[in-house]
Image (cartoon, rainbow, N blue to C red; front, side, top):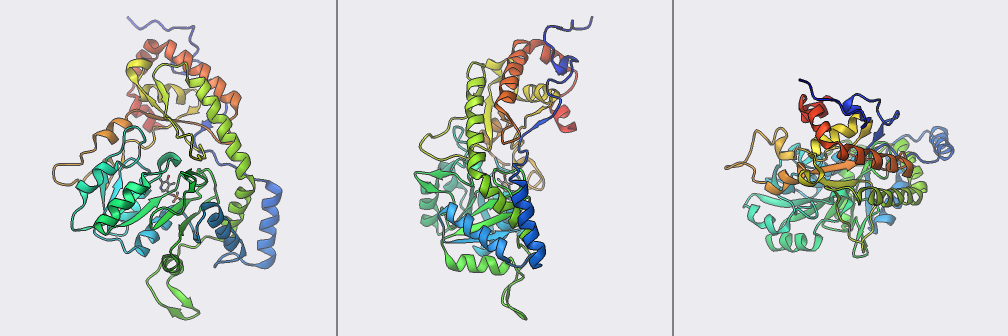
Length: 411
Ligand SMILES: *Cc1c(COP(=O)(O)O)cnc(C)c1O
């Protein structure tokens, strides 16, 4: 006997038409003023300055440095290369302690430089590297800590600084999520020895592709800039090993355009976050992670944890049901870097022990926001989620035939 289909539900997983004709993405790019961008591109073409530390890049660097409250900004072609050059500029080698609950670029940037990422577990409440677990991972080969301001929430900067100083380690932050965020009135940018931003299309502020190293250390900034341009100090003079990490004038033009819309985008993200709060509050088992009211957030990620026992559905089932409706929720940063290659095949003795990372990675669901998502969209997703939870048993039965994880892989 087949399971009777609940026709009252009108859910795509039960065969109905998807609720959204147009997909709602996590990280749909924010687009600035078109006319202003075309003007800037016109200037670039008129002056024939396409790259090599041109005026757009200089202005972009000054703007980033001002917002981040730092003395030096070196713009780069993307955040990953900025992380790699940052690690080089700090002369990191051997082992570096890093969370596994992050985008894989954080770990890859180290491994690509021949540095072994040593994964540290996270705090279950903040999802940030747990400073209580860092010291146990320090060995004679450890040269630094690379922490992440995950979701735009500032990492435990004071505790990490104290640990780094006690053990003579360098301290670097992956601030890819945290442009425009602050902690105790201090903007992200000046923490640690250096910080790295990403201005990738999917980030809150974008230059299509782009990144930057920011620091208050003039010598570090000089080295990073040198490395980003093959080590050239003059026309025919190369003074160091380097790579090509430069940002182009076109990317800088897109970045400068983004800055002109930054306040408006922040306002949209705040309004969307309030809408998500209203919509999710009455739903059992879908809990937005709490934010510290004293700090500035860019709210580029709407992050919740799914408690299967209260929601009646697991995170993967919920994400699969939403994706069927064209609400493209994500399981960031599943399954954790330690379960990706090459790290999965090269665990330390005894294996990676990251129980909190594992449990958080199994619960987190990230919902769409940004300027491509309206309050009305969010209200509709709210109604949809209510329907899904109301018909949890039917939804689970419908998904039972397929492995929800596999259904997600396929998309
Ligand atoms: C996006 C991202 C990066 C990489 O930045 P790109 O500009 O895409 O190279 C690094 N770390 C984290 C945490 C990110 O989210």
